[in-house]
Amino acid sequence: MARRIAAGAAYGGGSIGLIGAAGVGILLAEAQLAKRSVGGGIAPVPPSGNGWYGLAFGHTDPLRMGMLGDSTAAGQGVRRAGQTPGALLASGLAAVAERPVDLRNVALPGARSDDLDRQVTLLLSGAEPPEVCVIMIGANDVTHRMSATRSVRYLSAAVRRLRTAGAEVVVGTCPDLGTIEPVYQPLRYLARRVSRQLAAAQTIVAVEQGARTVSLGDLLGPEFAENPRELFGPDNYHPSAEGYATASMAVLPTLCAVLGLWPETDHLDVSRDEDMLPVAKAASAAASRAGTEVAGARGPWALLKHRRRRHPVTPVDAASEGVASAVSPETGPHDITPHGSTAVDRNAESPAEARRSRGARQGTTPQQT
Image (tube, rainbow, N blue to C red; front, side):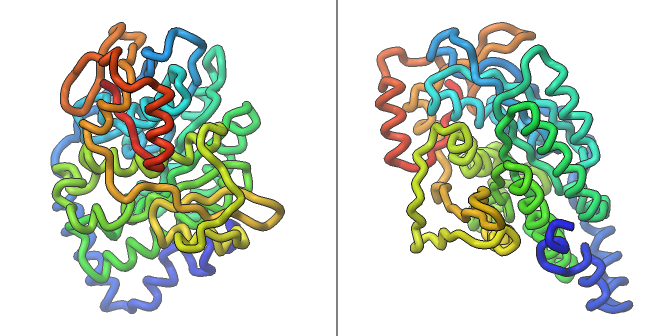
């Protein structure tokens, strides 16, 4: 059972038991307050980022990429398709691979892990299955009190189906709901503990099925703690455009590595706390440090890696990397950027030069221009 939910504690139940009856009353009151403060109004439908990215690299056969999960994977809260995680990741992948990427995003806002089976079926029903998939799921499992045992069982089955179909899989694990501003102590502590327990359990089952994971944690480190009003959207729950860029920047290196497009080495950087650990220990360590990759190694062991850059890429940095425009089956050729459309500079740095620059900088997230 995912190594007893990676920490040995019951999914929230143990924590509530320690708080006591009086504490439960406080938690219930805080939960009602948080519900009134978070996500007010009806959220707009996320923009569709489906289509081709990286057309500057030619009209060759594209890499087929699938995006699954909940509102985080769908890009809830942003107005432009180019600001969604799927579009950002597809743009970055196209730039690194120097090859077009065909993105199909089937993520559904509000989805829980039990919706993954439907989403996988949608992806696999196409003429050609995806070559790589990114799954971001878990937050709604926590808020709707789905048991971790059920949650990870659904995730494990989804990863298994995708792997059987020949797709590489990267899982962005459950974010830390304790970072949401309107959530106060002791509810904040409980939300953080439950989120991390689920993230650790997700890591174990995903790695066991041959996937790699990236811990989203507190949505990737001190940036969100220091700038919550910039990196969270107006509903105080979903990330802003800059927040999604930060999250995508952490996932992109792993997405490229799983396809053999990112430099891999057996050398572990001890200064960055990289290590080879038993899977359960690696999962627990990753859950407590956002932006950590866990990949299966041999037998019960897993590799713990820290690939992400510390600061998000700016729109100017993204534009300088020569990432091409997208084409949507619905609307035809178009340019997508978080801040409007611009043409690609054909005389700019070549893709090969840009690729070398990216390797030197270790993790820039390109955006489409």
